[in-house]
Image (cartoon, rainbow, N blue to C red; front, side):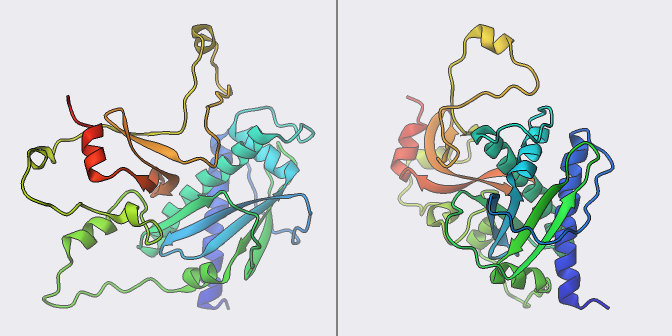
Length: 295
C-alpha cells in the first residue's frame, strides 16, 4: 500500500504527464503513452528549471536529451518532426516554451487538487548545481516521434511542499484579514517576498491631490516581449509555423506598458493557466503618474 507521501508525489507526477499528453494531443498527435524508463544519464541533456510559488516551494528541473528536446520544439512550432535536424537556439526557445506551457497546466491542476494557490516560474539560470532529492524518468510515446525521454528532478524543499497536506481553512472568531493581505492573496502578478516591488499593493496616500480623483480610472495594460519592424510583403507572407524574431533576448525582462507608456519590467510567470508578470523593476509613483498623464 502506498504511503500518503508516495501518493502525493505520484499525483504530482501524473499531473505533469497529463499536461504533456494534453499539449501533444492539441498538436495533432494521438495515443500518447508515458511508460517509466531507466534514469537518464546522457551528458548532452538540456536542463530547464522552475521555481515554485504558493503551496509549491523549492525548485524542480526537467532534463531531456537534445533529440527529445528538438522533437518537443518541432511539435510546438508545427515543424516537421525530424530528429536528425540541427538543434539551434530557436529549438531551445521552443523546448523551453513547451515546458512553460506544461508547467502552466500542471500548476492549475495542482491548485485544483490542493485547493491552494500554486505557481511554477521558469528560471533562465541553470549553471548552478541542482541538488536532487527525488527524480523520475519516463518516455512520451506518440507513435509519430522517437521516444521523447524526459527526467524530472525535485529538490528537498519542493519534495516537502508536495508531501505537505493542504492547510486547513480555519477562521478565528472575530478575526479579520487586512485589505492589503487580501489584495496580495488575489494579486495576478504572482508576487512573492523575493520581489518587494511586486507585492506593493497600493502606495501610501498622502494629502489629497488631483491624482486621487482619477485613481479608479481603468487603463489598458500590455506586456511587451519585444518588437520588430517588418515589410508589408513579409506581413502578408506570414503563415502557420512562421517564426517572427524579436529584438529582445529570452533572458531580458518583459515590459509592462500602461496606455502605451513603460511603467515597469519583470519576468513572465504562469498564474492559474494565464500569463502574468512578476515585477522586478518599477518607476516611482511620481514617474508613473507622469508617464500616463494626459497632457
